[in-house]
Image (tube, rainbow, N blue to C red; front, side, top):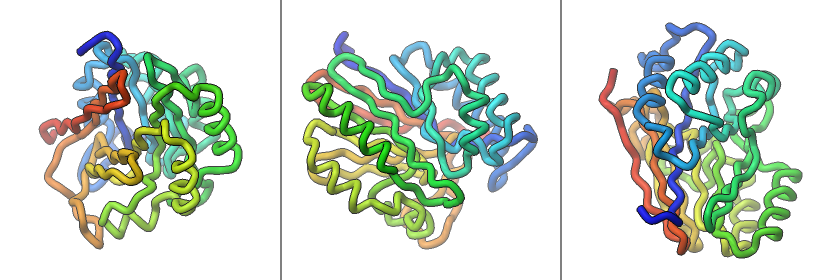
Length: 251
């Protein structure tokens, strides 16, 4: 990998709970998160991004468990986003000191971490303040290639049970994207499965969970026989992106 490349690891949907024995669809989420955080080898990356649903129950203890895992596996200052299961008050208080819904410039790239949390709803939205923040950054750094990270997906995946919970203002978002040709990718979590598509010259990537996965293209949620997952991304200086999803052996 040449020096101008930027390597980012994305983990998503840890679904940690106050109770360390909590299971989601038969998967102990603390053990699966621990397995994934150990496997990513964070020291080899320029940044680690956590795209929401860190918590299942929104409890302060669940975020404390996450911080402990980061410390244990040397995941320093991960860039964190909220998902629909997260509690905004608790995540901001308990993860104070970690980058949260901010932006990052590395090499020829600008990474914007977008808050799609919609209080009281499982679907997402991008608020006026977020559009204003993103637009300001894009105007400030017009020469940078841009990637957006967020929790909720913007394109339908073909899994109707989860597509009802994508960002509900998706048309507005896609129209906004067309105004900014430096945006190369939108990278999300939420769907607990792998997804990729290109629309309007923008790559859309969906990333599996560190816990339970679901079969693609189903009307109803169907658990897939896949272990914890995460995504590796390499952002080239010329605007190209190389990426792969890694699945670990089931616990």
